[in-house]
Image (cartoon, rainbow, N blue to C red):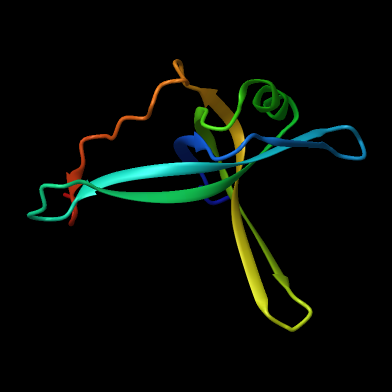
Length: 127
């Protein structure tokens, strides 16, 4: 039985998508997504912003849709799984990279608009 590996992420493309075809003709579309998290530390009145960047990979029909509909700044919601690659370089250094392989990509309406910050929550333990 497989373990659970489900991720949902919403953010904006940092650049236009890159599309390639495999030798068998299957499309692969890759792009990077910026996720913004707004929060307040206890006692602060100003919201802090934390930005994280994630690499996304899509295949087949989903790759076609991303190629046709996505551009830098497009707001998307990605549903997929984490995939890790590990390798050693020529000097013997160990490396690892985690990407999100998207099964589904949803495009938000009104993608031309500016992203508004969400109401930040205080940092700390949740109940």
